[in-house]
Image 1 (tube, rainbow over the protein chains, first blue to last red):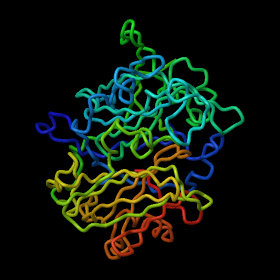
Image 2: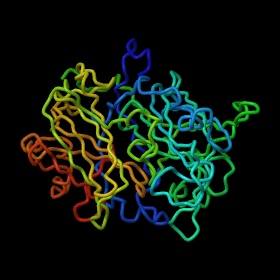
Image 3: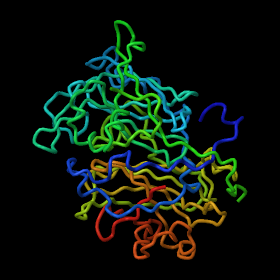
Image 4: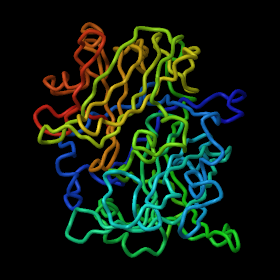
Length: 250
Length: 204
């Protein structure tokens, strides 16, 4: 919850229609698991009601000191995760270009060797005893966020005979309304695997894929410590409710 | 080329993948010590107002097999029909009810269970009350864009019959896909991703 929210009237407008052609369709045959998990009937379209316009808002009370530091939040005292040290930073904006304050971001990723700390991951790359792979942050008043981690490695996965996921970090985002809920993945500038990945290429428009590629940001680098990548996330924008005949009294 | 900084279109979705637990319910998948507990694991406390109910939800794929690697979030009003949200202008919701919960499907059975309260009625945009309902959001490996739907209650027949959203479902035979069956204090709800019984998903 942004600190100033008590002094300004909260926004209650409906969210812009989601452009489903910009997202990957439910069925992306080259990503095999989608075959039996994709709805086939047309979705029910309707303008947001309060159930979609409202959403949970998380406070700083949930955050621990190391939540935005994946290099240390699972590490033994005095130790740190192995790998290329990076800062990931950026802003959460809505489609109007307005920063989204108080947005909860949760991120997860493989370790530097491309291995997840999960019983379903059998890749032969080793686990790092000092790396758990999860973190979270709340955006600042202008929608900004930052966290520290190691660059995740690419890894092979059972889909085609030789499919490799590009290095990526998963992001889960809460805006201010439940209709803004989004999960996506961040890729790294210059990675040739992006354009061979059936999951990334499930997005029909190349320009849309490019919005998920974080740029190497040498200005935000910490000299002799960590490189930085800048990754902005855009959530659905909101209509102004000023001229809408919405009943708010009951 | 990397991010375009001046073009604001919603970031495209990507699947939550098979390891969604690491990020959203790390304690559930054995990553302890990072967060004290998983967010959304508990929805009610002793002071929460309203009728205690359980939800038992499964998500079934096109072969009828329950997904064992899905994650469900629910979002609902309190017992009086108020959302615990800044966008709620009609009054203050129960301070002992956050209204949001999160549950991964069991890795063996595919079952997702929530302990919550039965929500009150929330107005539709024209002021008429909608039937009590809970918003569902489902992600998993193989789901490219989180699936949005609602759970309605089998013992609210009259309210369901007048619900503005249920009324918009053209093929009436599909309405029951959104209605959970009451058994004791628990509601049973199967989400079908495909097939004859495919759940009505929303684009809202």
